[in-house]
Image 1 (tube, helix red, strand yellow):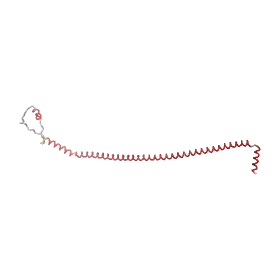
Image 2 (cartoon, helix red, strand yellow):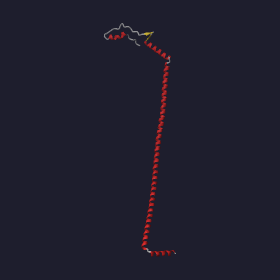
Image 3 (tube, helix red, strand yellow):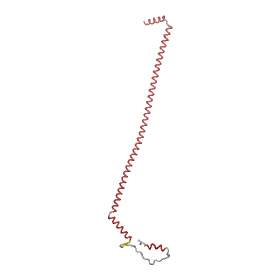
Image 4 (cartoon, helix red, strand yellow):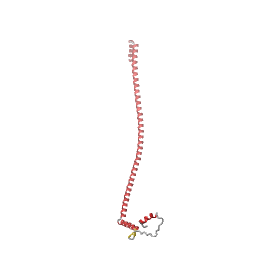
Amino acid sequence: MAPAPDAAAIAAPAAEAHATTEAHAGAEKHVAPSALGFDASMLVALAMLAVIALALWKKVPAMIAGALDNQIAGIRAQLDQATALRAEAEAIKAEYEAKAKQAAIDADAMKASAEEEAKLIISRAKSDATALIGRRAQAAEDKIAAAERAAIADVRKTAATAAAAAAAQLIAAHHDAKADAALIDQSIASLN
């Protein structure tokens, strides 16, 4: 290391700035400071060796290594925990994806079942409607037939009544007591 400059040497460049030329013929040689025969750099090296020796004697590197090992163990534990959490999250994600797929399959099955049930209900409703229409048509035909029979019976009754009344009028108009006696005689004779 270079020797430290003294105050006069520092002030000299300022004085030289005004002087044109100055001779250094009688300049003294500067001596570096020393203690116990060691210069400054040697003292710094000795101080560093003492600090390092003290650190080794107090086991500072072991403490630093232990602290670093503890931090490494903590980081490993956090990484293991993060890995476990990630695996758990992936398992939950896979479970929910499977549930979503199953729900979609179930929804499709429900839709197909509902469509089949709707078709069955529609076909049953058609057959029930056809049967109901058939029963009502038959009932209407039965009512019409009954009405026809009643009308025919009524017409026959009315015709019979009208024929009896007409026959009574004809008999009353064309038969007298003499004709009745001849008919009675003829009827009695046919019985014998």
